[in-house]
Length: 341
Image 1 (cartoon, rainbow, N blue to C red):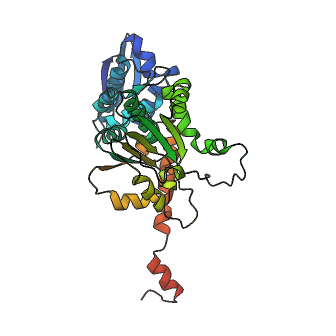
Image 2: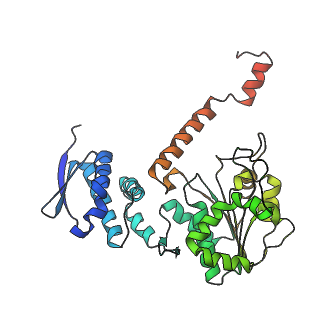
Image 3: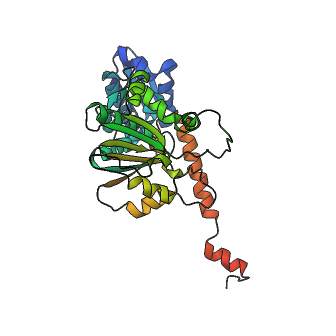
């Protein structure tokens, strides 16, 4: 069937053109390449031409980007890519709705908001559940959004302290002896948590609250034997816990506390053959009332667009590898000398 080519006109205010089209029109080129349309700005009006369905999608995406720009956002390449994917599903209005979901401001005044539908569902789950598991690949904002929610709750006196923890496991490397006192030895493992705290809370505020014992950053092993009341507790890198550690952590939770557990099931640093506590928790607790499991995907990656492509490429590779693996039954039959009948 022959494609129908059309042209539509859009009104884009001159003051918002550069923000929407990007530096050197880089965002406009992304729209043109992705949808096989042509964008021409002439006499203060934007001419969008190409196959009818693609033009409609491009116009929906551009109108959504305009609304974001009118709301004071600096448009990013990640936003353009996400709005495009939403516009293809006729859900572009969700991008503007997401922009209304403010969690807090960083110390530099930058607003912290969920940037994808998956992130919005994750933030809502944290709000409405005592324990929330955020599971997904790198760059989906699991830890950062949880940290923003924790700091917001702390500032509004919903909790009296923040406790941040993660297993102290090397990422596939043997670091050997580390110099310094105990705090110096564990700090490298906890650095990503410090970075998020500094960015949202500010170094001075963080140091003051840490000295008062109101903010605690510690390895998971330090949680044993404690009862954590009236606290906001975040367990990061939970895929590196053992089942015993995960059970120990979850049974520390006291009254008035809220817990967020984050992890990426595809990036385990446990010894070969060691079962992850996050995997077991997912199987054991997924139907327990009061506990939410949010699974973020490559669509929720909010780092550089190349990170999203890397995550997707690895997902495809791992799925192919899984399909190629012989089943245990087949492997056993081969070892025992059986041939298919």
